[in-house]
Amino acid sequence: MESFSLSVSQIARLSGALTGDELSRRFNTYTDFLTQSEWNAGTIVGPGGLGLSQERIDACAARLCQFFDKTGVDLDAQPTDTFGDWAERFLPTLSRSLKVMRFHPATQAGSADVRHNADEVFQDARVVASLMHGRRRVLSLVSPHSLFGFITTMLAPNLQHLEVVDVRSMAPDELSEAVAFGDLIVATPTLWRYLHETISGFPNNVMGLSFGEPLLLDLATGLRERGLGAMRELYGSTESGIIGWRDTPAEPFVLFDHWIAAEEKLVRIRPDGSEREVVCMDHMEWQGERTFKLAGRRDGAVQIGAINVFPSSIGAIIGEHPDIVDCTVRVTHRTGSLDRLIAHIQLRDGIQPTQDIAWSVDEWCRNKLQPPERPRIYVFNKK
Image 1: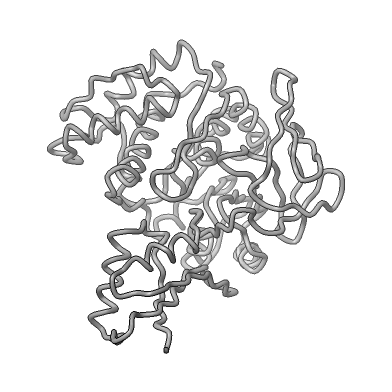
Image 2: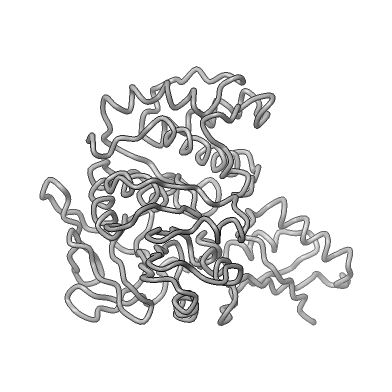
């Protein structure tokens, strides 16, 4: 357990990330990731800082306790508190015991969290840490509150005794100057595409780690042409844990050692030697006993900026607009650009697709949908 211990500053950073997620999920208040990246141990949660109400402070403090399955703990959160105060109060509880962790999947607000035995999370962290061997630092462009973010930017670097630098708030020129020989950059494919478009090159011996959505071959190739060394991609989900990895999108994924293929399912060999069956979120095409390619999601979800969204559900929500009869949402995949959602809208009889209608639909989406769920293009179908 000691090898997986967290510092006060890490718990404070985690508290900030969980606060941002809780505000979005429970209170429909979205804070961009650049702002969240600046929340640290010194950030005040009430007046003079984030300005949260007592109700929101209580909910966000409780979310930190829930993350480690310590729902009976009361942090006595006050408006004058900083995230560092929460971390210092919570650390003794965390040090005594940790058996379960709870993560929300990257999907629509309100989804139930997923419980994982702490030993299994540590097991995943060990294998990810092995992929970081030889690195000097970790530069993180992801939030630490997801399962993958927590493992790749906290637990695994701790095992390798690596400094972690949150670079989400850096401008492209700042980041370009900050990257150094031996660094590991952790980012989602959406952010990797941003780096490809804004950074002219990478120093020698810089490695990338990607997860959250498919890493396309053209992007991986383009990054290598800019000087990036190895680009390792992780596969798994919040529900299953981290399952496999690969060095290039041209190759199949390889199962980590604690997984065994079992037809349409996988079997996880837990740290105590027991086994647990897991049904993956994706269909898998097996290339060998321990290698596989992905063949589409089972649940119809698509990934926008590493967030799972459901086009059919989004279409139904847009279709509830009083001027709309029907709405179908699809995702476009274009080489060299980001995936995006397009909404095909059928208006009610007598309603014309004017600018006012377009504004009304856009406002509806802003009120009803989270940012990753909002279509980028609206197409009003002709009758």
